[in-house]
Length: 442
Image (cartoon, rainbow, N blue to C red; front, side, top):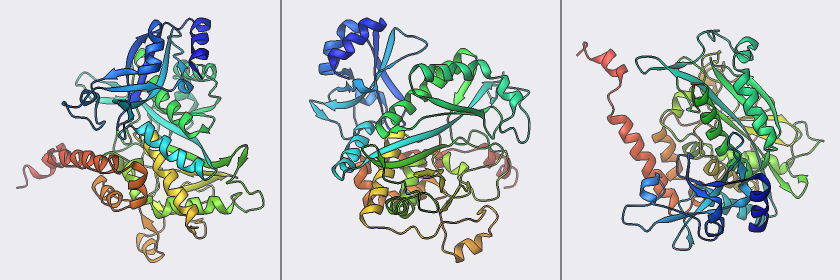
């Protein structure tokens, strides 16, 4: 969308303000509110920010201000405030693209794929929970009646949330996202809304807006919405399954109807790349200390986990890291709800392209229920495991040339440093578990 088209939209829709936005390492959107009469200057020069105050974006207090240059293809009229438009942007400093900008990192990787004749399509299944705080400040599932041990798809619990869910779906319909399903998920007060896949950058922008929209609308209902991977020890965590496929024009390069799984040879090589680099990818797709409370081994039950930790692929088998839900589609199920969609898409694309370039064979698909296969048998079969801690994932990331290159020579080491600092802060914290188990014993 060029500036002339944006101005026409401003007049047609009565847009009075723009939220000129960007994301830093967490993926959470930051923004400035810019009045529409300043559209020309925003388009040319962006909106300015003191980078050090904006989060982990590679800046220190002595650095010059950064600006977010809007990409008007991402322009989204805020459905509940239609006089305001949100627009995603890319960080620049002194006229140059800033290598610490997650959106720019994804664009760089997409450009590499385009040079090979590929475009990445991406869909996401974003799970979230609706919570409340009690008088002591403790967070709990908001609905006191939502107590089933296996609440997935429960109509009664869904019905009690229809006002909010139908409102969100209508907003998404108005935005032409084509939402096609909403359900109560596997944990109490956990939900998911699915919408149609698109090109990877568009999906990452929409995923970012979606998370902000859910949180904002939840607040209007007196709830706290969270995409945190594992808010409660006894409940299923929040995932963000990514559905990926490579395209050339209107042709899905992953589709082969004659194959038993409906996948082309290219798709299998892409899977091979994802499997080869899985342990390093985890540091990006599962970026929090908390993620590894969700990625646990063992048999699932409602209120446990549906997050596979085995480096495998299979058919429509939810115990595998990579599931093939249908022809021409690859679903990676390990991603947690806190994954930065720009960074996750970038590194997964890099791993898949490495698989294609080096024709990495993923082996035969795995049809077992891996949750019940004894661990010693998995080891004997040389089935790998994802990292069990953020620190372990960072070790794998730091040693992986393909994934670090995708992040860039500046951002890769920076990301590792920021996340190691996070791990160290976690380890310095004295938890309630330690007090309960050690205080009176020693």
